[in-house]
Length: 190
Image 1 (spheres, rainbow, N blue to C red):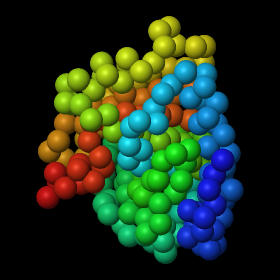
Image 2: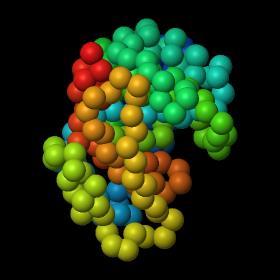
Image 3: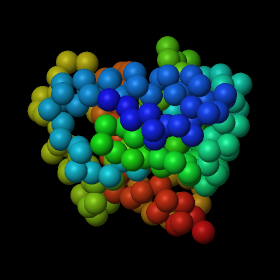
Image 4: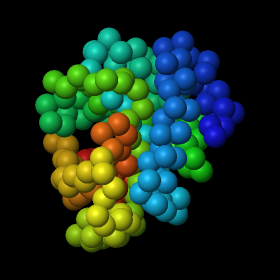
């Protein structure tokens, strides 16, 4: 499953050991998620992988760790909390994707059963106004029990690109679809 050669950089960082262990578990959940939805997403680029946590000390520890294996690409206030984007020196391999961007949302008001990897975001190369229809077309109708879909338009303070999002979740992990990469979104801010 997980190709550990690609997580060597993470494995060498004390602050990220819980995430190294959690990556294989996340990948197994993603395989089951994909199978249950009969979801064919390998053709799309995985733009980034995201974490979730409810403990500020965990977020600070992860931040310190990611700064040892990458650089802070962006830090924006979204929905009242900082969201950090890290550009990794060595990509993380998840399924057949090489992912070189990690999103670290700082804790909000929610408490989670699990602090660790939470979602992968894919780029569907379509016009923003077509994103929701294209993403929905990938999903079975009706959805299997336990799955739900959420549409949103997240926006950072300086973002200029429309960023419609379709998220599908089983309550444990999530796959999100966007029309642009986070790097494109960050560039639009400047």
